[in-house]
Image (cartoon, rainbow, N blue to C red):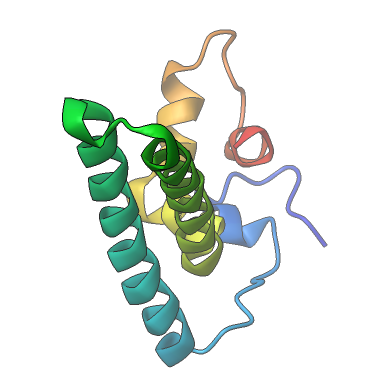
Length: 113
């Protein structure tokens, strides 16, 4: 089912579309994830940069907020669909032409990404 000998230029020609979410649900995940990510990064930076906020329970809150930000980032990446992200920015072509050792085809670049 994959075009092994042809170089079609996009990763979606090699992999089936796995976007199972509707655009409304994706938009909701993106908005909530990005707001949560910004808020948790703000709390983390505030706690670890202001000396008065580095008391005992606040350090734990800072680390909890940091890990919450990491979780929000992963939720946003999951909602975006990595294949769409790769194709939008043309990362398969970038990897094909600049990666050392050289990648011979777009399919190999898509598999590597």
